[in-house]
Amino acid sequence: MAVIIGDTCINCAACIDECPVEAIVDEDDNPTGEELYYVYPDKCVECVDHHDEPACATACPTEGCITWDVKFAGDDKEHFNGGNYIDGLDYVMNDADAEMPFRDDISNEDRLARKNVVD
Ligand code: SF4
Ligand code: SF4
Image 1 (tube, rainbow, N blue to C red):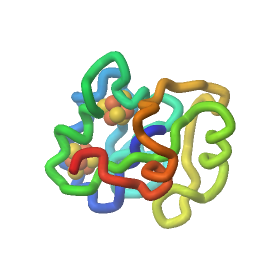
Image 2 (image 1 turned 120 degrees about the vertical axis):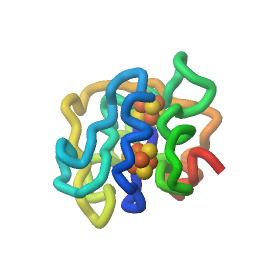
Image 3 (image 1 turned 90 degrees about the vertical axis):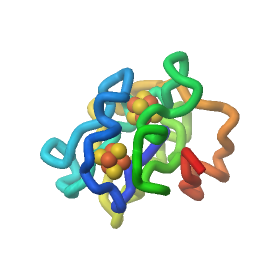
């Protein structure tokens, strides 16, 4: 990841078709079992080479719902092995070995603080 959908998600579907890499699934397919949309961290490319900013967050009507998370690359991927998702849930991914593009202008400090993608 990249970006994370928080528990203020209202399941409105505005984001899902905006994703250029089909990284988002709806509440029925959320692998954590939460009634929220979910971004697969090993699929999200932070919209690098697709849009100027994450298209999901631009489309989302719920302020603060989509926030930055740790990049899915290099040693930082260890973050995804713990219970760091919402309410202590584990992340679910298909390819833990993937190395995904990320925006290097977003600091790790802001990522760990889960700063809003769109202010
Ligand atoms: S940031 Fe871009 S690639 Fe990642 S989930 Fe959102 S729309 Fe998809
Ligand atoms: S646009 Fe925002 S509120 Fe709507 S489903 Fe996506 S993350 Fe949830």
